[in-house]
Length: 132
Image (cartoon, rainbow, N blue to C red; front, top):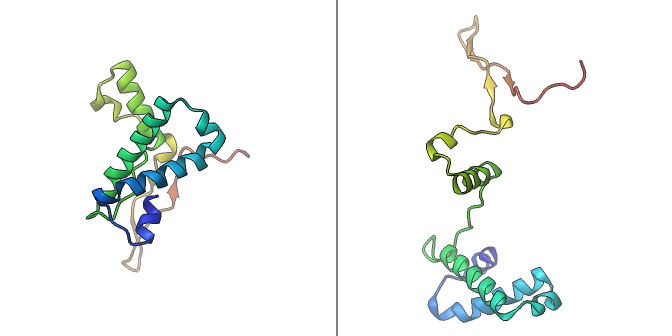
């Protein structure tokens, strides 16, 4: 919805909130399917709609009312949050956790005979040739 409002040149306003809510309900019905969404208990529908509207409102108020996309956590960030929340791990130490594919190793810069500097070939230690 943020993309659609940005593409059409709309900006956030409190007066337009009921219209955005209607669009949001239609988007939720499309996502879940009209029949399934209508079977949700009224409390559940209200909770989903209110949470979605609050997120939409927060994102639309960014960038001078023209909206900005919500940041999605990476898998690494989600795992770290889970460990901190559920196991009480120290956030400073949890920062040392990384995905092996995220590490890139470059050979040092080599200065050639012509005086130019050449970058080494990048190697990613987490990817190996399966064929010996």
